[in-house]
Image 1 (cartoon, one colour):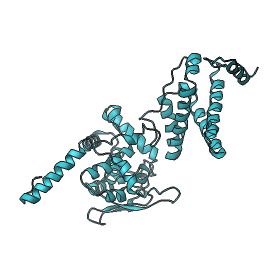
Image 2 (cartoon, helix red, strand yellow; image 1 turned 120 degrees about the vertical axis):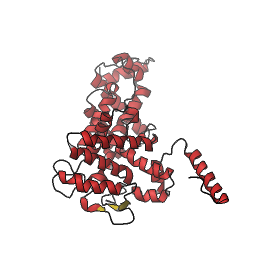
Image 3 (cartoon, one colour; image 1 turned 120 degrees about the horizontal axis):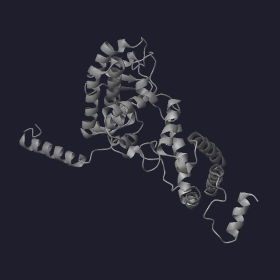
Image 4 (tube, rainbow, N blue to C red; image 1 turned 90 degrees about the horizontal axis):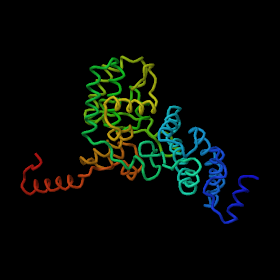
Length: 356
């Protein structure tokens, strides 16, 4: 008798099965996928959406290589990391995490008792705040505060000291200049990796400017170029880099080149940052991503009074609302703003500078 028919007979007889009618994990997972898809149809999803999501779910489960209830956070790291190394878009990696998280939530709601009875596994979702792609669920890293100015300065101090002792001066110095650029200019990893030497304009404006020719566009609009000032001494860092560091790499137009003279992949940028923070010896709770440096740029400039529209233009956002999603003020932001306002008012009344 087919498994599905046997299950229908059990349910019709008034008994609710506490164990799956098959103890083969792959066969049971296939049955769960079928039930998950049936729930999409019940919710009114379009046939096109269902077909696309079925394919995505199957590719995700194949890449994970084990039943969904046995998947660990390290498995998610591996699959998403492999996609990054292969150059798959951030949106694609996000979709892999989204579809798996939805399937796992379905298993928790509908199949948890059967899975525990048959396979001895209590379901715990392996997607957490350390591997969830941005905008996936309520535990998105975007909800976490960016590193504080003090934490960023400590990291750059570590990198600067490392340059003097490391065996390969060139890559260490390049990493220092590159991550300083990500932070002070608020660049995305890919934007920094696509910079070329002629994109540095030291005489443009009071600080010099970076010409970000391949800024991220909206949807399918193509690259959106912008000019970003070299603030907080970034011009000095990049002058040093061009004169003392870049000549140690093969000659090419690429600014932050790899050891063959080519562009660094954005996945390589992320991996380099992770490696450096492991060397620094910080616990995982004090580590951050390249995108967190971009959010730190927005937050720290906002906290010190830079106009929100100026930050929007600097980061290359289409709308101020996008910029506000990057800004996560510190816990004492309200108190600090209040004290600045009071000090400013007192200075106007007394004619003295009370902030000195």
